[in-house]
Image 1 (cartoon, rainbow, N blue to C red):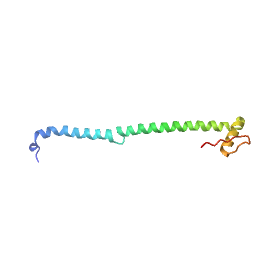
Image 2: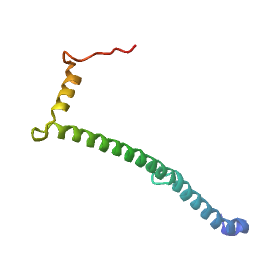
Image 3: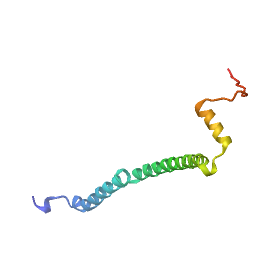
Image 4: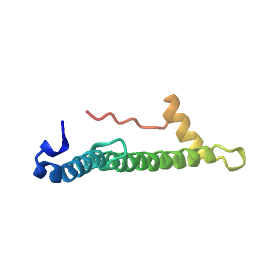
Length: 102
């Protein structure tokens, strides 16, 4: 097939069509690709969720560290120890009044 037999308008439009196809290809992958905009949005959302979870766990850790600090022999609080033993073991003093709510 000779080049002269191809329509000249088609030959002039071919580079623009190829450029448009390349642009569409890269545009699609810029949005939907592995590192595209939508993947980035998911990563930002996941980062926010994980940051909130990390903050919650850090608060829980601080609370547990505070409870452990109360159990150290050099700083042991007798009232706290009594309350903790009652709560965990279910013990009561003879003078305690038990109120059962229904």
